[in-house]
Length: 273
Image (cartoon, rainbow, N blue to C red; front, side):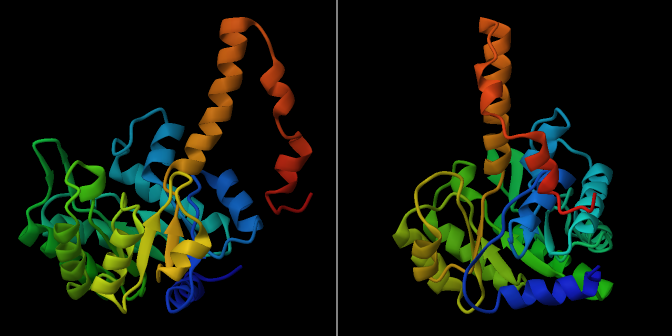
């Protein structure tokens, strides 16, 4: 079994050159399957985890999120990045305290968002947003874990799709200590290239939740890391809902015939029988 320190070292190495996909499991089973498929690292998904507990995204309490980090990180040999939402706090001092707790869970990295959850004020004010990233950086440095910090600017997914402001924030987060930068929702080649160039040489993560690009195309743009957020969880829910609705509404079971065999599922966990 790899150690937490070894996984941090490997996670940082992955960000140094090239382009890799970091898919998002929502539980231990999906994490083991993805690791078994050969992905070099994984990232939790706040939405996928929330749905698995019958909640909306951003409605899982801190203690459950930390426990989720621990069990996912302990279930696989590859590095795991923790989707830490907005740090589960607004004030920098509270973000710092919560990040310190997250750094002790065994994850190799974590991300901090700048969205507030309030429709009338969807993003934290710029100075506060920067201080929150700086507080997260200080907590990680004090932990001695060396885990990788990703700074996220959420404008494009909370109704403020301002590329100039997004770049301003990402550049400031880089200066405040973020190791990787991430603006979920950007999709055009021009916008992605602009973000890559603005924060270089620091790596950029791009979210792909639909069929609008390829790994090769993003690699050509200089993207270092590609995640899928809750898209794999949505794909799983799609199959489940389609089959369940057919039974409930039509009294038929044709969708169950499309399911993969139990032996294939169990064989993909990478466990000895």
